[in-house]
Image (cartoon, rainbow over the protein chains, first blue to last red):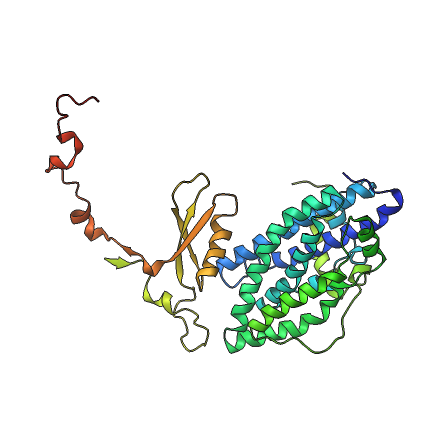
Length: 257
Length: 114
């Protein structure tokens, strides 16, 4: 159970929001494919991955709400916060784009999330460790599914390769933020509750570069990286997405179904 | 005799764009799922996929998401040779005119303990 000292609560709460919001926002982006994927089987696959991520978000935000002790629950955190209070990385809030964008983004994020969850299994907080252990199994499948698709798109037709390359070019500048550590990350890593993301980058680079290389896709040279999501500075896309995601809960406060 | 899938399904997306599929669907695969507890694999249904690995993933997503399986087999539908309704008589007529095919035809010899 949670045994954080009062002084540590703000950092742990903030950290759990980062973990939960990444998954909630990407889960919602994937759910936008429901009924629109290129083929029925892939429609089901994307919906399954979305449900995995939203399930993880539900557990993480529920835990965040419990340690915050302000009477909020996971639903309140998901549906009643504005974009400025969201702590997801910018990568996951990008619009779903075409199928190549969705798949490339899924690979970039899933490899990161798997490394993160593997490390979080050793969290000193038993709840965090338990959630991570469950997530690892799901994330391994997400990596396998998205890597398989990246190879097919890269090695497919001229059009599929061009779209996959464009997706890599567009999304790459959003990957650096995943590994930026600030005081919150360092504080939770210090207490053993969380994981400093910076040391995960070398493993992430080697896995992602291996898959993209085998798919015949090239990584942009530009070293410029976007940032800001972890501090609540988001792109305009998140506001639009939240408006749609939150409209029912906000229009009917307290409703249950 | 007939195969279960028609020929158009074998020519789906080959990747170079030269053989455009007549059918918008990918090739069909039959899915066999083994339930927990050592039961044999059973036919669960079918999925579309471009290769075995994708077929396995699609089968997992469609037929094994709620703990129904410990193992999955996928087989290209076109590889299955199936009987047709025309085979009904010659294949399945029970041969009741040949009672010696049934064990009840034989008497248990004296001295055999049942």
